[in-house]
Image 1 (spheres, rainbow, N blue to C red):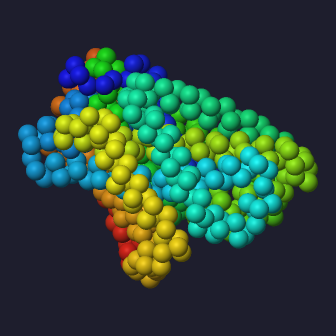
Image 2: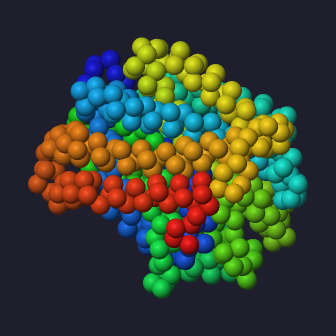
Amino acid sequence: MSASREHFSSKLGFILAAAGSAVGIGNIVGFPVNAAKNGGGAFLLMYAVFVVLICLPVMMAEMAVGRKAAKNPVGAYGLLSNNDSKWRFAGLLSVITPFMIAVFYTVLTVWILIYFGAALTGNLAYLADPKAFGEIINSPYLFAAMIAVGAVVYFILVAGVKDGIEKGAKIMMPALFVMLILLVIFVLTLDNAFAGVKFFLVPEVDKITPKVISGALAQAFFSLSLGMGILVTYGSYISKKTNIESSAILVAITDTSVAFIAGLLVLPAIFSFNPNINPNELSDSSVSMIFIFLPKIFLALQTTVGYFIASSIASIFFLLVFFAALTSLVSIIEVPVSYLMDEKNKTRKKALNTIFIWGGLLAALSALSFGMVDWLTKLTSYGGASKSLFDLIIDMFYDTILPLNGLLICLFVSYRWKKENLNKELSEGNPSFGQSILAKYVDFSLGTFIPVIVAIIFITTVARIYFGVNIFG
């Protein structure tokens, strides 16, 4: 490993940074909503199974590839494949994907910041108004908030791996946990809250359908940032003394814990707000839940806890989601930054400037595609629906290419880099790994059924998004 390469200063720093990359809007809101719409406890059970059986081996593979090569995804695939152009292209997909995901994620983070500001000033009545969301996403103040978000992310990343990413994660991740737990404690005191807890925690086996299984698998895969190049990049910043097996397990536990606790927050709040609610009535969109449904709950709280406490609860919630979005955004942007530093010999500052110029331009255009600019709003159509630039970026890069990247990493470590090399790297910092049951499972699963399952995710996603066909109903 190059002596000049930046490193995390500790295993804890790496775990918090990697967990921060995985913990995002999908954990805080997307997971509870998917659980509500897919059988509650049944979904939770299948999600936990897939994290262990599918996601953990892929996480370990990505970290091992990054540490062995001590490079970004393009450099790692290239070095470990003897500069095979096909695999360098696969690595390039793992750089382009997070860059484009950062574009739409920046827009979401900007919206969250604006909502946090409104909640902080006690403007809950406005946020709960059905017209508010449409006005906010088309407000000229949007771009001032975008500059503020960009400045915070730039400040963290320009400081580097140890003094920027790691320090930021050590502040924001504990703060996120504390805020989340405080909100859960409060919500569980509300009337009918435990009806939501029961729905969330008690699995009903008859609800485990192909649709629930597919939804849980996709949520687990996306939740842990697999196929995004982040864990390859972060893996390149860890030392040979780091135990990848235990690190991956702790990252998975942290990420799943946040999703689980978020379920204990959102589901009881929903059931308390509307005791007779049918979970299937909830929107599939995390965006709708955060910006349209939940503000109504915060406003309704005023009648029981008063204006000040309701505003405080709403402020803490949006700050919590903002921190979750920020930790993810930092991690996502670090991937193309690392690529420019490794492959194009740019300094960190110059690499950041390049990414922020082009990424900022695309983020601004995406923000304009919600009605402010007509041709961006109606950019194209497929799957029976009109699509904006924002929609296109999510559909193409987050929903489609992400699982494809996950498939490619499985094929790479099993059939190009070879399993014996993977095991050798995973044994660094963990000499007994090669003799463990997990080593045999990782060996077997990455080369057999995991690629098949990830390929199914990819195929079903393409069928649903581009052709309007739901294979699993």
